[in-house]
Image 1: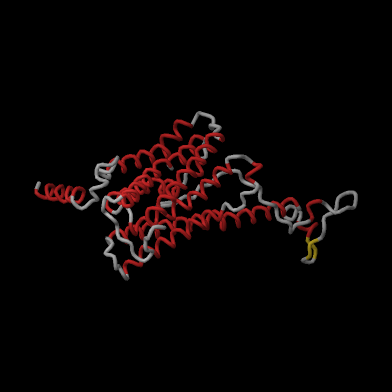
Image 2: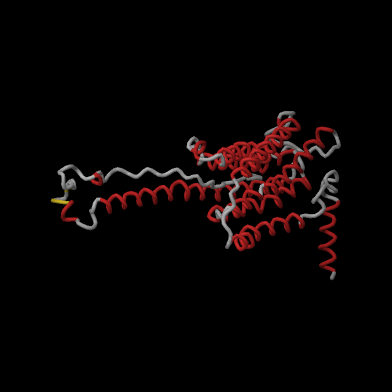
Length: 330
């Protein structure tokens, strides 16, 4: 009982005495457990409950809903990025080391408020996955996707509770900028094939995410060498570790999506070309003395399939594949 009492007292001291008193009474800020509970419910709904409810239903047609939703996310991300700039990062914040302003000055409170709204935005991003489930796009409800969306509200909660502003808000600054571009892409993709054919830059969204995490790593871990503003070093470890984890998750996704998968498609196309050219079924008619012999049709003209080295062009995919971030995000 003494151990339990000591743990409880230590927890209350952490939550009540060491946290930022300005954000203590803000929605969902009294304890991390409601946020953790919401995130766990999200994971259960999109991985278990949602697919069960959709099992005997046709996929929902949500094109107009997706356009509106992504447009609102673009506006929300733009506002968050603007608030981070005008209340700190374009108003005297140092990239080298920036302490948290715990005063109740208008600028300090504006930054703290922006941090809370950034935290709230992590819940709105749950709809990304919910829409995937409603459309029965289960292949896009990947482990990376669910981990990224599920873990971010709880991660950002600690920042709003203890350090709403200062050095750690650099993560949110970058992430909201990335989300402006990302949700713009998703909005355009939802408009249909006429617009999708111009969205050749899809894979560079993942590259942008990885660049984001590299910048966050460097920005956070520099405090391990020189912390001239006495910023809480635990948060430098916390933010830097998140950036490292997500960098490797996203780089693995990039490798699987754009390197391994591309090679597999190429090999499949070559195999189809070989099969159509009868190289497997009638090898003695196509190969003589180690050289390929053109296959001719009955009219004496070369057969359509004789061009064996021509690769098949990848068809354009209209499927949105979310690679998200941020503090994340992403």
